[in-house]
Length: 377
Ligand code: SAH
Ligand code: SF4
Image (tube, rainbow, N blue to C red; front, side):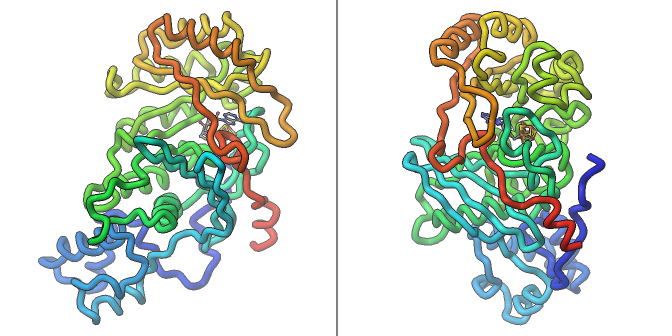
Protein backbone atom coordinates (compact mmCIF):
# COMPACT_ATOMS: atom_id res chain seq x y z
CA UNK A 1 0.00 0.00 0.00
CA UNK A 2 2.96 2.29 0.60
CA UNK A 3 3.79 2.94 -3.01
CA UNK A 4 0.48 4.61 -3.72
CA UNK A 5 0.34 8.06 -5.09
CA UNK A 6 -2.23 9.83 -2.95
CA UNK A 7 -5.24 9.81 -5.18
CA UNK A 8 -6.79 12.78 -3.47
CA UNK A 9 -4.12 15.04 -4.97
CA UNK A 10 -6.04 17.34 -7.29
CA UNK A 11 -3.99 18.13 -10.35
CA UNK A 12 -6.52 20.22 -12.19
CA UNK A 13 -7.22 23.70 -10.99
CA UNK A 14 -10.82 23.67 -12.02
CA UNK A 15 -12.15 21.98 -8.94
CA UNK A 16 -15.88 21.66 -9.22
CA UNK A 17 -17.12 18.80 -7.09
CA UNK A 18 -18.22 15.81 -9.16
CA UNK A 19 -21.76 14.88 -8.11
CA UNK A 20 -21.34 11.29 -9.29
CA UNK A 21 -19.17 10.49 -6.29
CA UNK A 22 -21.39 12.05 -3.63
CA UNK A 23 -23.79 10.12 -1.42
CA UNK A 24 -27.13 11.70 -0.57
CA UNK A 25 -25.83 12.82 2.81
CA UNK A 26 -22.78 14.40 1.15
CA UNK A 27 -25.06 16.28 -1.25
CA UNK A 28 -27.22 17.39 1.63
CA UNK A 29 -24.21 18.81 3.47
CA UNK A 30 -23.02 20.67 0.37
CA UNK A 31 -26.46 22.11 -0.36
CA UNK A 32 -26.85 23.22 3.25
CA UNK A 33 -23.50 25.03 3.00
CA UNK A 34 -24.75 26.68 -0.18
CA UNK A 35 -27.69 28.10 1.76
CA UNK A 36 -30.51 25.69 0.90
CA UNK A 37 -33.07 25.82 3.70
CA UNK A 38 -33.22 22.88 6.06
CA UNK A 39 -36.87 22.14 5.32
CA UNK A 40 -36.14 21.91 1.58
CA UNK A 41 -33.00 19.85 1.84
CA UNK A 42 -34.31 16.31 1.56
CA UNK A 43 -36.51 17.15 -1.46
CA UNK A 44 -33.66 18.91 -3.27
CA UNK A 45 -31.24 16.06 -2.56
CA UNK A 46 -33.73 13.51 -3.84
CA UNK A 47 -34.35 15.53 -7.03
CA UNK A 48 -30.69 16.02 -7.73
CA UNK A 49 -29.80 12.41 -7.00
CA UNK A 50 -32.57 11.08 -9.20
CA UNK A 51 -31.74 13.34 -12.15
CA UNK A 52 -28.12 12.34 -11.88
CA UNK A 53 -28.26 8.61 -11.18
CA UNK A 54 -31.67 7.50 -12.36
CA UNK A 55 -32.19 9.72 -15.42
CA UNK A 56 -28.48 10.05 -16.21
CA UNK A 57 -28.59 13.78 -16.93
CA UNK A 58 -25.21 15.35 -17.54
CA UNK A 59 -26.35 18.94 -17.40
CA UNK A 60 -28.32 20.87 -14.80
CA UNK A 61 -30.31 22.48 -17.64
CA UNK A 62 -32.43 19.33 -17.91
CA UNK A 63 -33.46 19.38 -14.26
CA UNK A 64 -36.75 21.04 -14.97
CA UNK A 65 -38.20 20.86 -11.48
CA UNK A 66 -35.40 23.08 -10.16
CA UNK A 67 -35.51 26.85 -10.59
CA UNK A 68 -33.20 28.45 -13.15
CA UNK A 69 -31.46 30.36 -10.36
CA UNK A 70 -30.81 27.17 -8.39
CA UNK A 71 -29.56 25.35 -11.52
CA UNK A 72 -27.10 28.18 -12.18
CA UNK A 73 -25.82 27.94 -8.64
CA UNK A 74 -25.45 24.17 -8.94
CA UNK A 75 -23.55 24.35 -12.20
CA UNK A 76 -21.04 26.74 -10.62
CA UNK A 77 -20.35 24.33 -7.77
CA UNK A 78 -20.74 20.85 -9.26
CA UNK A 79 -19.97 18.89 -12.37
CA UNK A 80 -21.63 15.65 -13.49
CA UNK A 81 -18.90 14.61 -15.86
CA UNK A 82 -17.99 11.04 -16.61
CA UNK A 83 -14.56 9.72 -17.45
CA UNK A 84 -14.10 10.26 -21.18
CA UNK A 85 -14.33 7.27 -23.52
CA UNK A 86 -11.18 7.45 -25.65
CA UNK A 87 -11.51 4.05 -27.26
CA UNK A 88 -14.33 1.55 -27.60
CA UNK A 89 -14.00 -1.94 -29.04
CA UNK A 90 -16.86 -4.31 -29.69
CA UNK A 91 -16.15 -8.05 -29.75
CA UNK A 92 -17.79 -10.48 -32.16
CA UNK A 93 -19.67 -11.85 -29.11
CA UNK A 94 -21.07 -8.40 -28.28
CA UNK A 95 -18.73 -7.69 -25.35
CA UNK A 96 -17.64 -4.05 -25.25
CA UNK A 97 -14.36 -2.77 -23.91
CA UNK A 98 -14.00 0.89 -23.07
CA UNK A 99 -10.78 2.77 -22.51
CA UNK A 100 -11.38 5.78 -20.30
CA UNK A 101 -9.33 8.86 -19.74
CA UNK A 102 -9.84 10.47 -16.38
CA UNK A 103 -10.36 14.21 -16.02
CA UNK A 104 -7.71 13.93 -13.31
CA UNK A 105 -4.98 11.75 -14.81
CA UNK A 106 -4.51 8.24 -16.14
CA UNK A 107 -6.39 5.75 -18.27
CA UNK A 108 -8.35 2.67 -17.26
CA UNK A 109 -10.65 0.05 -18.75
CA UNK A 110 -14.19 -1.19 -18.23
CA UNK A 111 -15.93 -4.11 -19.89
CA UNK A 112 -19.63 -4.62 -20.60
CA UNK A 113 -20.78 -8.21 -21.12
CA UNK A 114 -24.29 -8.67 -22.52
CA UNK A 115 -26.00 -12.01 -21.87
CA UNK A 116 -29.51 -13.29 -22.53
CA UNK A 117 -30.89 -12.59 -19.10
CA UNK A 118 -28.58 -9.88 -17.84
CA UNK A 119 -25.87 -7.40 -18.68
CA UNK A 120 -22.80 -7.28 -16.50
CA UNK A 121 -20.41 -4.40 -16.24
CA UNK A 122 -16.91 -5.21 -15.03
CA UNK A 123 -15.46 -2.11 -13.39
CA UNK A 124 -11.94 -1.15 -12.38
CA UNK A 125 -11.00 0.03 -8.90
CA UNK A 126 -7.46 1.22 -9.59
CA UNK A 127 -5.26 2.21 -12.50
CA UNK A 128 -2.84 -0.71 -12.56
CA UNK A 129 -2.30 -2.85 -9.47
CA UNK A 130 0.35 -3.02 -6.73
CA UNK A 131 0.04 -6.78 -6.64
CA UNK A 132 1.62 -8.83 -9.34
CA UNK A 133 -0.16 -12.11 -9.76
CA UNK A 134 1.99 -13.97 -12.25
CA UNK A 135 -0.83 -14.86 -14.67
CA UNK A 136 -2.53 -11.41 -14.76
CA UNK A 137 -1.85 -8.76 -17.38
CA UNK A 138 -2.93 -5.90 -15.08
CA UNK A 139 -0.29 -7.10 -12.61
CA UNK A 140 2.46 -6.22 -15.10
CA UNK A 141 1.40 -2.57 -14.91
CA UNK A 142 2.67 -0.63 -11.91
CA UNK A 143 -0.04 0.99 -9.85
CA UNK A 144 -0.71 4.50 -11.02
CA UNK A 145 -3.39 5.44 -8.52
CA UNK A 146 -6.66 4.60 -6.82
CA UNK A 147 -9.84 5.54 -8.66
CA UNK A 148 -12.05 8.12 -6.97
CA UNK A 149 -15.70 7.36 -6.09
CA UNK A 150 -16.95 9.49 -9.01
CA UNK A 151 -14.71 7.50 -11.37
CA UNK A 152 -16.04 4.21 -10.01
CA UNK A 153 -19.65 5.34 -10.48
CA UNK A 154 -18.71 7.23 -13.67
CA UNK A 155 -17.67 4.01 -15.44
CA UNK A 156 -21.26 2.82 -15.13
CA UNK A 157 -22.76 6.19 -16.08
CA UNK A 158 -20.58 6.42 -19.19
CA UNK A 159 -21.42 2.88 -20.32
CA UNK A 160 -25.12 3.56 -19.75
CA UNK A 161 -24.79 6.74 -21.85
CA UNK A 162 -23.20 4.67 -24.61
CA UNK A 163 -25.96 2.04 -24.43
CA UNK A 164 -28.80 4.62 -24.03
CA UNK A 165 -29.69 2.72 -20.88
CA UNK A 166 -31.25 5.46 -18.77
CA UNK A 167 -34.85 5.52 -17.69
CA UNK A 168 -36.95 8.15 -19.37
CA UNK A 169 -40.40 8.67 -20.78
CA UNK A 170 -39.67 6.72 -23.96
CA UNK A 171 -38.18 3.56 -22.53
CA UNK A 172 -39.27 3.55 -18.90
CA UNK A 173 -40.70 0.05 -19.17
CA UNK A 174 -37.74 -1.48 -20.98
CA UNK A 175 -35.41 -3.84 -19.15
CA UNK A 176 -32.15 -2.12 -18.28
CA UNK A 177 -29.06 -3.30 -20.20
CA UNK A 178 -26.78 -2.95 -17.18
CA UNK A 179 -28.22 -5.19 -14.46
CA UNK A 180 -25.15 -6.59 -12.68
CA UNK A 181 -21.81 -5.23 -11.57
CA UNK A 182 -18.57 -7.07 -10.89
CA UNK A 183 -15.56 -5.33 -9.40
CA UNK A 184 -13.17 -7.51 -11.36
CA UNK A 185 -11.49 -5.05 -13.69
CA UNK A 186 -8.12 -3.43 -13.08
CA UNK A 187 -6.83 -3.24 -9.52
CA UNK A 188 -7.35 -4.69 -6.07
CA UNK A 189 -10.59 -3.19 -4.70
CA UNK A 190 -9.73 -3.84 -1.05
CA UNK A 191 -6.61 -1.71 -1.42
CA UNK A 192 -8.95 1.15 -2.32
CA UNK A 193 -11.62 0.21 0.16
CA UNK A 194 -13.14 3.58 1.12
CA UNK A 195 -13.55 4.80 -2.47
CA UNK A 196 -14.94 1.48 -3.66
CA UNK A 197 -17.36 1.39 -0.73
CA UNK A 198 -18.56 4.93 -1.42
CA UNK A 199 -18.99 4.18 -5.15
CA UNK A 200 -20.88 0.93 -4.60
CA UNK A 201 -23.16 2.49 -1.96
CA UNK A 202 -24.11 5.15 -4.52
CA UNK A 203 -24.94 2.64 -7.23
CA UNK A 204 -27.03 0.58 -4.77
CA UNK A 205 -29.11 3.55 -3.64
CA UNK A 206 -32.69 2.92 -4.64
CA UNK A 207 -33.31 6.54 -5.57
CA UNK A 208 -30.52 6.29 -8.12
CA UNK A 209 -29.16 3.40 -10.16
CA UNK A 210 -30.74 1.04 -7.65
CA UNK A 211 -28.59 -1.99 -8.44
CA UNK A 212 -29.30 -4.49 -5.70
CA UNK A 213 -26.43 -5.51 -3.44
CA UNK A 214 -26.99 -9.10 -4.53
CA UNK A 215 -26.25 -8.14 -8.14
CA UNK A 216 -22.86 -6.76 -7.24
CA UNK A 217 -19.80 -8.96 -6.70
CA UNK A 218 -16.48 -7.71 -5.44
CA UNK A 219 -13.45 -9.87 -6.16
CA UNK A 220 -10.33 -9.79 -4.01
CA UNK A 221 -6.98 -11.53 -4.20
CA UNK A 222 -7.21 -11.96 -0.42
CA UNK A 223 -6.60 -8.75 1.54
CA UNK A 224 -7.55 -10.52 4.76
CA UNK A 225 -8.02 -7.54 7.14
CA UNK A 226 -10.65 -6.00 4.84
CA UNK A 227 -12.61 -9.10 3.85
CA UNK A 228 -15.28 -8.96 6.60
CA UNK A 229 -15.90 -5.30 5.79
CA UNK A 230 -17.23 -6.32 2.37
CA UNK A 231 -20.21 -7.81 4.14
CA UNK A 232 -20.50 -5.51 7.14
CA UNK A 233 -19.86 -2.17 5.41
CA UNK A 234 -20.79 -2.69 1.75
CA UNK A 235 -23.15 -5.67 1.73
CA UNK A 236 -22.41 -6.90 -1.79
CA UNK A 237 -21.38 -10.44 -2.67
CA UNK A 238 -17.79 -11.62 -2.30
CA UNK A 239 -15.49 -13.50 -4.67
CA UNK A 240 -12.07 -14.76 -3.65
CA UNK A 241 -9.27 -15.31 -6.16
CA UNK A 242 -7.95 -18.54 -4.74
CA UNK A 243 -6.18 -20.17 -7.71
CA UNK A 244 -3.90 -22.39 -5.60
CA UNK A 245 -4.49 -25.04 -2.94
CA UNK A 246 -1.02 -25.11 -1.36
CA UNK A 247 0.96 -22.13 -0.11
CA UNK A 248 3.76 -23.12 -2.43
CA UNK A 249 1.61 -22.78 -5.54
CA UNK A 250 -0.40 -19.82 -4.31
CA UNK A 251 2.75 -17.89 -3.28
CA UNK A 252 3.81 -18.14 -6.89
CA UNK A 253 0.47 -17.28 -8.50
CA UNK A 254 -0.99 -14.78 -6.03
CA UNK A 255 2.01 -13.36 -4.15
CA UNK A 256 -0.19 -11.62 -1.56
CA UNK A 257 -0.36 -15.16 -0.15
CA UNK A 258 3.07 -14.55 1.37
CA UNK A 259 1.46 -11.90 3.54
CA UNK A 260 -1.82 -13.69 4.30
CA UNK A 261 -1.53 -17.40 3.61
CA UNK A 262 -4.21 -19.92 2.73
CA UNK A 263 -4.82 -20.89 6.35
CA UNK A 264 -5.43 -17.26 7.41
CA UNK A 265 -7.59 -16.64 4.36
CA UNK A 266 -9.77 -19.69 4.95
CA UNK A 267 -10.11 -18.93 8.69
CA UNK A 268 -11.35 -15.43 7.79
CA UNK A 269 -13.87 -16.85 5.34
CA UNK A 270 -15.16 -19.39 7.85
CA UNK A 271 -16.13 -16.52 10.14
CA UNK A 272 -17.44 -14.29 7.32
CA UNK A 273 -20.59 -12.44 8.46
CA UNK A 274 -23.97 -13.43 7.00
CA UNK A 275 -22.68 -16.47 5.13
CA UNK A 276 -25.55 -18.61 3.95
CA UNK A 277 -26.60 -20.81 1.08
CA UNK A 278 -28.28 -17.86 -0.56
CA UNK A 279 -25.23 -15.65 -0.09
CA UNK A 280 -22.39 -17.93 -0.97
CA UNK A 281 -18.79 -16.95 -1.47
CA UNK A 282 -17.51 -17.48 -5.00
CA UNK A 283 -14.04 -18.97 -5.28
CA UNK A 284 -12.36 -18.02 -8.52
CA UNK A 285 -9.89 -20.56 -9.78
CA UNK A 286 -7.91 -19.87 -12.95
CA UNK A 287 -7.03 -23.13 -14.69
CA UNK A 288 -3.35 -23.16 -15.66
CA UNK A 289 -1.97 -26.10 -17.57
CA UNK A 290 0.19 -28.39 -15.40
CA UNK A 291 0.32 -25.78 -12.63
CA UNK A 292 -2.90 -26.14 -10.64
CA UNK A 293 -5.24 -28.30 -12.72
CA UNK A 294 -4.66 -31.85 -11.42
CA UNK A 295 -7.17 -34.07 -9.68
CA UNK A 296 -5.02 -33.76 -6.53
CA UNK A 297 -5.59 -29.98 -6.70
CA UNK A 298 -9.34 -30.51 -7.01
CA UNK A 299 -9.29 -32.80 -3.96
CA UNK A 300 -7.32 -30.29 -1.89
CA UNK A 301 -9.67 -27.52 -2.98
CA UNK A 302 -12.75 -29.38 -1.79
CA UNK A 303 -11.08 -30.11 1.54
CA UNK A 304 -10.06 -26.49 2.02
CA UNK A 305 -13.47 -24.98 1.51
CA UNK A 306 -15.37 -27.60 3.50
CA UNK A 307 -18.19 -25.99 5.49
CA UNK A 308 -17.98 -22.68 3.63
CA UNK A 309 -21.21 -22.08 1.65
CA UNK A 310 -19.61 -21.45 -1.69
CA UNK A 311 -19.44 -22.02 -5.38
CA UNK A 312 -16.36 -22.41 -7.51
CA UNK A 313 -15.88 -20.47 -10.68
CA UNK A 314 -13.36 -22.16 -12.92
CA UNK A 315 -11.77 -19.62 -15.25
CA UNK A 316 -9.89 -20.83 -18.31
CA UNK A 317 -6.61 -18.88 -18.37
CA UNK A 318 -6.84 -15.99 -20.82
CA UNK A 319 -3.44 -15.53 -22.47
CA UNK A 320 -1.86 -12.14 -23.08
CA UNK A 321 1.30 -11.15 -24.96
CA UNK A 322 4.33 -12.26 -22.97
CA UNK A 323 2.47 -14.51 -20.51
CA UNK A 324 4.22 -17.73 -19.50
CA UNK A 325 1.18 -19.88 -18.79
CA UNK A 326 -1.01 -22.08 -20.94
CA UNK A 327 -4.73 -22.70 -20.74
CA UNK A 328 -5.59 -26.13 -19.27
CA UNK A 329 -6.72 -28.83 -21.66
CA UNK A 330 -10.54 -29.03 -21.80
CA UNK A 331 -10.39 -32.66 -20.62
CA UNK A 332 -8.48 -31.65 -17.48
CA UNK A 333 -10.99 -28.89 -16.78
CA UNK A 334 -13.81 -31.39 -17.15
CA UNK A 335 -12.28 -33.87 -14.70
CA UNK A 336 -11.57 -31.07 -12.21
CA UNK A 337 -15.08 -29.59 -12.54
CA UNK A 338 -16.73 -32.99 -12.19
CA UNK A 339 -14.87 -33.80 -9.00
CA UNK A 340 -15.83 -30.49 -7.44
CA UNK A 341 -19.42 -30.90 -8.58
CA UNK A 342 -19.66 -34.39 -7.13
CA UNK A 343 -18.44 -32.99 -3.82
CA UNK A 344 -21.56 -30.82 -3.83
CA UNK A 345 -20.30 -27.49 -5.15
CA UNK A 346 -21.59 -25.69 -8.16
CA UNK A 347 -18.56 -25.37 -10.43
CA UNK A 348 -19.39 -23.52 -13.64
CA UNK A 349 -16.57 -23.00 -16.11
CA UNK A 350 -16.55 -19.33 -17.01
CA UNK A 351 -17.08 -18.74 -20.69
CA UNK A 352 -14.38 -16.37 -21.88
CA UNK A 353 -15.93 -13.23 -23.36
CA UNK A 354 -14.37 -10.58 -25.55
CA UNK A 355 -11.16 -12.55 -26.13
CA UNK A 356 -10.72 -11.07 -29.62
CA UNK A 357 -10.53 -7.57 -28.14
CA UNK A 358 -8.47 -8.60 -25.06
CA UNK A 359 -11.41 -7.86 -22.78
CA UNK A 360 -11.49 -11.18 -20.92
CA UNK A 361 -10.62 -11.66 -17.25
CA UNK A 362 -7.12 -10.53 -16.41
CA UNK A 363 -6.38 -9.07 -19.82
CA UNK A 364 -6.92 -5.44 -18.95
CA UNK A 365 -3.96 -3.13 -18.98
CA UNK A 366 -3.86 0.52 -19.93
CA UNK A 367 -0.90 2.40 -21.34
CA UNK A 368 -0.79 4.66 -18.30
CA UNK A 369 2.46 4.17 -16.50
CA UNK A 370 3.46 5.61 -13.21
CA UNK A 371 6.53 7.29 -14.65
CA UNK A 372 4.28 9.39 -16.88
CA UNK A 373 2.35 10.54 -13.85
CA UNK A 374 5.46 11.30 -11.85
CA UNK A 375 6.72 13.54 -14.66
CA UNK A 376 3.51 15.55 -14.36
CA UNK A 377 4.09 16.10 -10.65
N1 SAH B 1 -7.75 -7.82 -8.06
C1 SAH B 1 -8.94 -8.55 -7.89
C2 SAH B 1 -9.99 -8.25 -8.94
C3 SAH B 1 -9.53 -8.12 -10.37
S1 SAH B 1 -8.99 -9.59 -11.18
C4 SAH B 1 -8.65 -10.03 -7.80
O1 SAH B 1 -7.52 -10.42 -8.08
O2 SAH B 1 -9.54 -10.77 -7.42
C5 SAH B 1 -10.49 -10.48 -11.55
C6 SAH B 1 -10.29 -11.99 -11.72
O3 SAH B 1 -9.60 -12.30 -12.95
C7 SAH B 1 -9.45 -12.60 -10.61
O4 SAH B 1 -9.99 -13.81 -10.15
C8 SAH B 1 -8.15 -12.83 -11.30
O5 SAH B 1 -7.37 -13.76 -10.63
C9 SAH B 1 -8.60 -13.28 -12.66
N2 SAH B 1 -7.55 -13.24 -13.69
C10 SAH B 1 -6.48 -12.43 -13.74
N3 SAH B 1 -5.74 -12.69 -14.84
C11 SAH B 1 -6.36 -13.68 -15.51
C12 SAH B 1 -6.10 -14.35 -16.74
N4 SAH B 1 -5.07 -14.02 -17.50
N5 SAH B 1 -6.96 -15.32 -17.13
C13 SAH B 1 -8.04 -15.63 -16.37
N6 SAH B 1 -8.36 -15.00 -15.22
C14 SAH B 1 -7.53 -14.04 -14.78
FE1 SF4 C 1 -4.03 -7.29 -9.20
FE2 SF4 C 1 -6.14 -8.97 -9.24
FE3 SF4 C 1 -4.41 -8.90 -11.30
FE4 SF4 C 1 -3.64 -9.93 -8.95
S1 SF4 C 1 -5.27 -10.70 -10.32
S2 SF4 C 1 -2.46 -8.48 -10.22
S3 SF4 C 1 -4.72 -8.60 -7.52
S4 SF4 C 1 -5.75 -7.23 -10.64
